[in-house]
Length: 375
Image (cartoon, rainbow, N blue to C red):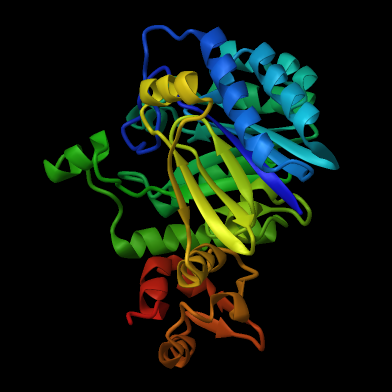
């Protein structure tokens, strides 16, 4: 059985006001020490998954492009030594489009990275400043063009439904983005997450997002324009040409096996027919101390019940345009509510699959909340 590997690099140069990811700013980082710890935790999980094939690798964060190419190469070399790699293994690295990091692309490619995902977030300088980004539009475009010259596959992220953004604003931004796109684009609607600087600003009345009707129009425009460009949504916020989907993220949404190493990383592994959920210590220094003491930084390891597994499969699978197999989520679904959601136009009930419709994906949390059994 194949599986995926996620490596979390928790450090950023600054904390963006919308971000609730496990990312941290530090004055200095002992990269040699961090490399050693990541390799130790990789070895720990490799011992548990011996003989399996590694299909995808993803360096996420934080800002993994702050790592040196030598660290990336060490991790990929160790992975190749401990597991059998798929012939078409996908190796993705997230990067910020600042010039100093873009210059590392040649080194990352030589290390074995074959796909990059750039955190562009906006192609508008005023919006970039409001989002706390350190680059401008011109720098972002140069980074995308450099990625295109170095890698066969590249993607970038944009955020819409930003404060003050209109439908015509977003249409112009998409006009600029689409010619830069490769086989994949991630287009996220801005949400205000608890504990972020944006949440504080919103509570003070200093931040106002577009109203519900405008947000819906922005979403609909996104779907229409990307579909017309040959990049329909295969997941709520992700668009790709046929075959261009991020195979690593499909592992999560299809509830397949993956190992997560690094601070706060999650994992899911099938053991004796049961799903085991792992979670590493979230705080970087706590994780590092645990790895130095015991060879891994696992804070929690839980064998999920069949009902819990079904609930996870439902929550992740309905994000996909392909939906989820009915049999895989039977324990989690309140069958009495399926027909109501179908009649309301939020759910499609095929012979053996449940799929959220376009309208359902706009309000997916509510659809899932309605579907989940309460007993």
